[in-house]
Length: 420
Image 1 (cartoon, rainbow, N blue to C red):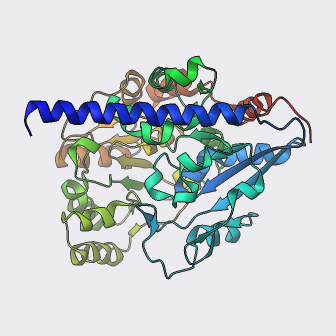
Image 2 (image 1 turned 180 degrees about the vertical axis):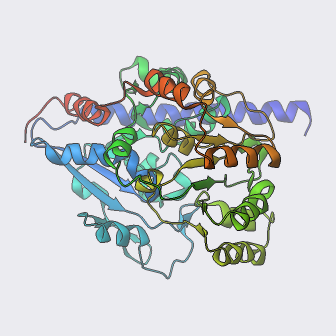
């Protein structure tokens, strides 16, 4: 493609982006003029990616406690790509089954073949999505449709750790439709407010640096952390794509298996990103047989196991240390005060400043030798970065308590503070 064609494509894309954003603001403006004057404030949490539930659980419970608010859970099956069910003949709903099994009152979004629950029938004031990616939602629940009758809000499943991550996760396709973004850090909030400055200037959109309720949920789950033997949780990333951070799975899988085999007094828990095996197989980075063989290797080790449970918060307290690629799990685990062994991506990413600060309290390894040395040191109970980590936890995350209540206050005040 020559330079002229490239310029034409770019101009076309920018024009389309401009008109799409203008349409989003038009819908927001029309919606703002139709806010109900009475009745409880109704909030719907669309759930699908269960590992992200701990980010909004505290807010859901806070809204359920209040007299002037109502909160609903709408469960969408996990097997959706490109806006369509991978198996359109399958009417089961794994997300709904999970939440019902956990004792929640929940609504099954899948009511028939290619038929979806009418979200608008709940008359929601606000709707939260689990992830800012429309591709995982059926068309009726995608942001461009929901914004026509409810104010869209989002609490990210994890804050951006790099400048590249800001652009990727705070993407225009989804975030252009948001009325309110509740950011974990001021860096995210400032970036968002600048990127969607048109709506911000008109009072239709706003990002709030309020914090993430996940930290309160993590603290509430504390207990049972009397680890009987050194237990290491390994969380490799989901893709080999350098632009997305890459994965150290292939670099360290046999290293850690050998360590576990040679140290029966320790335990290895492997918890890959939920998309890892499927993505690596689909992209041709490994075969399905190789993935099955790896699972078998873990099963044959008496002190190692693969953890693919949908929820993981309590488990963090039941381990000695985390070994992880670049991931929000590093942030969550860091706030427990337990040590983190960080495996940086092969392609250097420009971290956000607060991330570099946090990494001052982590053990950073670049190869097999450094990884084994770090594991052996922590297995002996030696943690020289302990004090520094405690200081950083207070400096970076000491003011996050009460974020769920503050977010609920914003929603109620925005709705005119009406009573039920």
